Image (tube, rainbow, N blue to C red):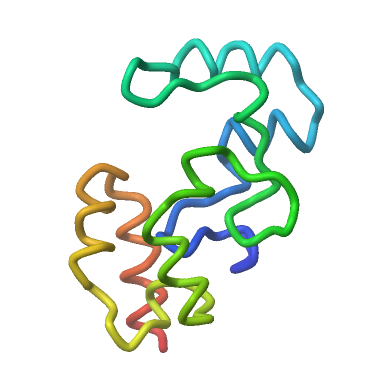
Length: 114
């Protein structure tokens, strides 16, 4: 995985169903992902699912467009949160509590190598 496909928060955009549906123009995957991710507090539709990646100028999944971690890291112009002088901030930690272990492990490995 290249750092460019690693989201600021440590998620791997190249593994994301929203990204895969977009780059492969895969309507079946779009439908399956919408069905899996859609919920009353955050409605997901095929129209707001497509994503070229967290750091792209192309379309972003609606959640990613509003993501506080992405907005912060983008504003600070860091490659990932691991590159940030405030690594481990409350914004990141809150997100990682929902994101699962893989994202945190990626960031920890990257941060320790800097």
